[in-house]
Amino acid sequence: MIDLSYAGKVGVRKEHRGRSRAGQTMIEYVIIAAVLLSILPIGAVFLRAFRQNSTRTLALAASEYP
Picture 1 (cartoon, helix red, strand yellow):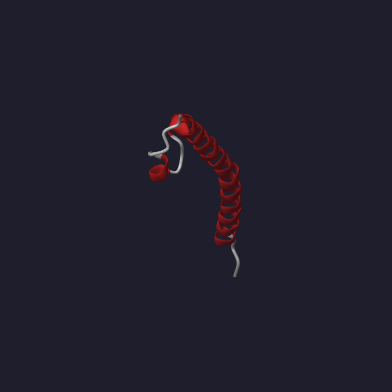
Picture 2: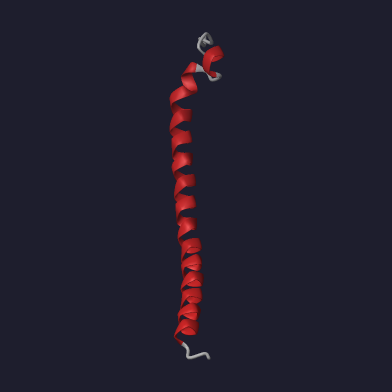
């Protein structure tokens, strides 16, 4: 017989508690890895845009505009 006295406090049965925690941790690591890997290309796009803007600004400041 399954002991359900602990289930009311946590919301899971005692026999499945360890396995679901391990799966949750793995899913969290996969989500964090995907977020970090998606930040890299986004950062590269922003870096390129800011460099292009600064190059234009320096070119205008260095030009001999009357």
